[in-house]
Image (cartoon, rainbow, N blue to C red):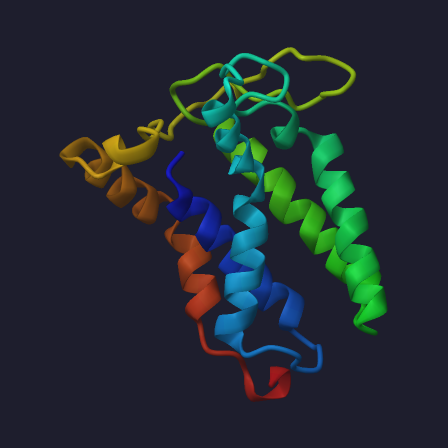
Length: 174
């Protein structure tokens, strides 16, 4: 999956998190923060530079695409939110959902090796039974005609998240 869908999920999560909360960041700042968190599982691509193979436990869509990783990130989010005197449990739940959604969306792509959802208990890679999302090329290959087509397909498919993120809030929610 191209990163666009993950970013849109993060932007929608930022609005969901902010609803009914005191403003700590601007809407744009919050969207950037939650979108960055939604992209975190793809930090595993750095391993390619160090000889980590795609199919390795720490390879692409391996450990960082697991529910255990999502829970670990949620614990870190809880700690940071608690330290900042923010609603820690709410932040942790949204953080877990955003990070786990990354892996779940990646299981819906039509390529790759699947995601190691249950790492560290199993290195088995999983795909969803329904795989409507075309897999995006990695690296510079994304900047191609094929990459552009996939990005546009993803924007259309993930447009409900974009619409929700951009929809004006009611006065009672401000």
